[in-house]
Amino acid sequence: MQHMTYSGVQKSVTTSVRLPRELRRKIEREAASAKCGRNRVITKALEFYLRECEQATYETEARHQSQLAAKLDPPDAVWDQMVEGDLPPP
Image (cartoon, rainbow, N blue to C red; front, side, top):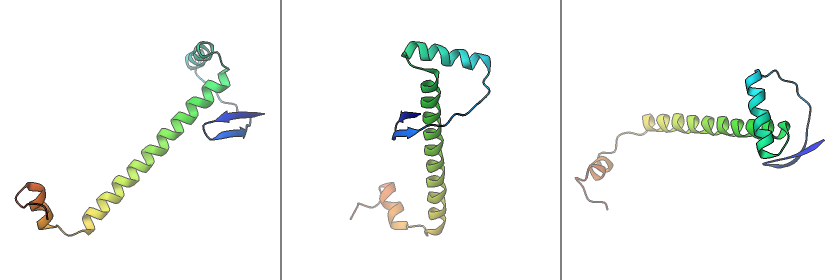
């Protein structure tokens, strides 16, 4: 079986998961509302969640790298004066 994802057509595999009853009901309601199958609702939800996790990982790593770089760079008195408005930009 093939299905469309945000990255194109991909072959799919069958995976079994246990869901709380209320979550299953919510999936069924969303599928009925969107006029699509439960599989599509679950797939879209997982793709969204995993993109969010990936983005959070990138943001955490960027923050970490920024903190490391700030520790390596010696303070720049001229830059500090420009930021504080005590010195006009060049």
